[in-house]
Length: 295
Picture 1: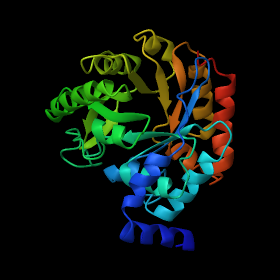
Picture 2: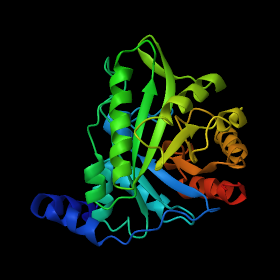
Picture 3: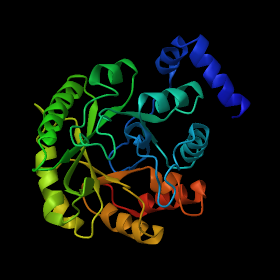
């Protein structure tokens, strides 16, 4: 581990109050203006025990390596900020990497990957009050819906309460509603247009108001049908990067031209590209945003 990261651990050990001090003094970036797309790097997968990328089952296990990749991504032109859990965002705060960047707190990480209770996705990280206290710019929640799994009901209820609480702080709720099925215990996202539309229909109605709700959705081939189901602003998620990057980029580019699609929230696909060139992958994604509509 580098001297810089050793110093980070010493700060955590001896001056834990430095985190709150850094949050209070952070220079914030305004949420993008109309017509300007949003580009956020996601880094909340490890909190669910989801560390693998393609054929590398422990790709995200090394914290120094992850922080190096995040800092590089955040330094690239057009990147607005990061979405992460408390440990990741606080490391970045202490390193000064969130200056003039958006910070979105990931809220429900209790649905551990592969667990029997995976779809009972408890709020084990941020809540609305802590996001407001840290002066962050939004809260993200995963809302996976399996009609055959009772755990989905608890997740729906918790997400609805979180949307309401964030709205009370006038803070964006970034809801990721995904219709899912289980196959031999593995949770699979249903990417058929009808399933994605069902997820949108449920996700956009969580909470007492949708005034501050944005949706985080997969980019699928029939994205026009999905976008016809909502008037809420939408950010495209990256998902598990199992396809060739060129295919993924082409799908993002098509979706970004649709009215209502306001940008990208992508993690593993850009932080761990096949050639490990993080800067190049982030720059390609940024170039797609410059050609998209994002109105």
